[in-house]
Length: 192
Image (cartoon, rainbow, N blue to C red):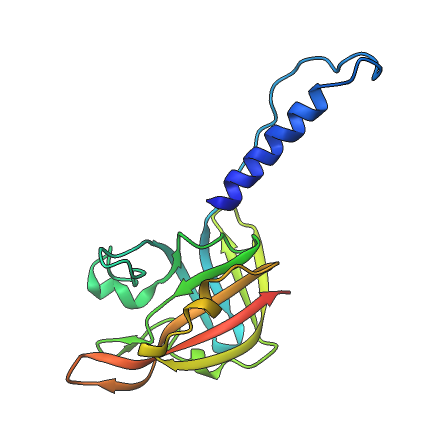
């Protein structure tokens, strides 16, 4: 949202500056319609060829406790395993900053889209397709696994100079007492 606001303000400022002139600048340009900005389309599909993965992408917001939703929070749990989700508070894939996609590693014995995320290697490609058919390709830089209590929030969500992608899932040992995995696996990727 910050980027959209900046682009809108930048476009408005450019229009204002282009429409103004000094007394010695000659005649002012003819008045016309204000420029418009069409935001990029939302992500719809993620392709990870090295893992044989193609998954639809749904929107993920925040839970009441301030944590990112997980797929299944807004759909029937039986559908949760099928989709990856885009954290809507992160940039759109291809815009500057880290766009965050999350998916289940598994759900009730069925593999999720990111079941083999820990097997990605440096140089593997991830392509995100938007609802308008545009595609953005990222190259995996590294894959890390962290205990959930030590989730690398800064590394995942902090601003970056260029477009980047984060793929997040559960990992490590499944704790039957809590019903959750003990770790998170994160793939970090940069624009190809």
